[in-house]
Image (cartoon, rainbow, N blue to C red; front, side, top):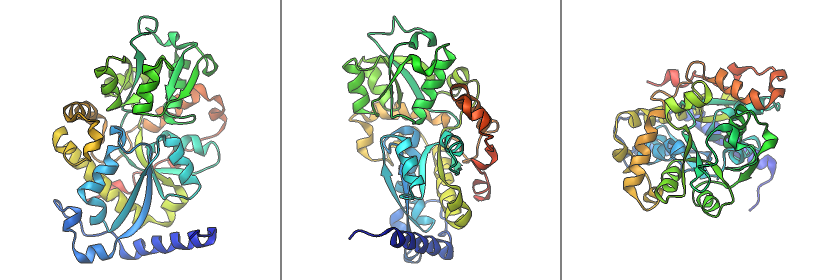
Length: 352
C-alpha cells in the first residue's frame, strides 16, 4: 500500500514521539541484541539510517553497532540501508526518506552553502580513511599531483566526498577541476573492474578495496589519506570524515532520539579502541571479508587509528574542511558558512 505524504509525516512523528517518551534503553556493558530484556525490547522504535557503503571500513561502526546490540540497548530499532555513495544518502536525508546518514562530515558544509542545514552529531573518523590509487600501468607517468592533468580519475559519484577531495588534490597540483575527467565508478568490484579495464588511470578507494587492488597487482598507493600522517601531509591538517549527521531541525526536535544514537555509537567507538582488529572482524558479516579474512583483518588494522574513541569533533577539523572545500569552490568564501551549526558535541559529551 502506497502512503501519501501526510501519512508518512504522521508515522514519522509517531515514531519520534515514541522514542522521546520511552527514552534510551538501559545500558549494559556486555549485552547483545539477544540478551536485551523484554521490557527494553518493548520500547524498540524504528529509525532509518542510510550508509554510503555499509561494507566500507570507513563506515564500519554502523554495522558493528547493530551487531553488538547497542542500538537495541538504547531502545532503538535502527534500519541500516546501504548506498554506493554518500551523496545519494545525503539526498535521501534531505528528501525525508531517512532520519540519519553515516557519511562524510563535509556534506554539512556543502549543503549549508546551498541553504540546507545538516548537523553532525557523532564523529567517527579524524581523516578520510582513503587512498588515491594509481594504475600500475600508469604509475611511471603519474608521479606528482601536477600529473593528474588530463587523466580519467575514478570517484564514487558526482558530488560525493571523494569528488570533493579529488577536486582539491587536482587544484593543489596547479590544475583546475576542468583539467581532469571525474568518472563515477562506485566502490568495490565496480571500481576494481574500471581500473583493470583501463577506464580510469587513478581512483579514490577505501579499505578493503585498496588492499584488493594491491593484492591483484592492479594499482598502487599514490596519495595516502588513510593514515593520520599521510592525511595531514596531503591536506595540511586533520580532515574529519565519516560521521553520523542528521537534519538540523530533526536534531532540535528529537534530542532524546539523538542522545540514544550517540550513546550507542560512542560505545562502539570505545569497543573498537579496546579490541583487536580480529576481534572486531569477528563481529561483522563474513561477506565483508571479500573472501579473505586475513586480508580484511590487515586492512582493518591499518584503518583503526583514524577512528575517534569518543565521537567528538577534532579541534580545528571543521576549519580545515572548509579551507579544503573553498580551494576548489571559491563561492564558499561568499556563503558565510557558520561552522558552529554544522556539528555539535552536545550529545557525545553527555555519554556516560
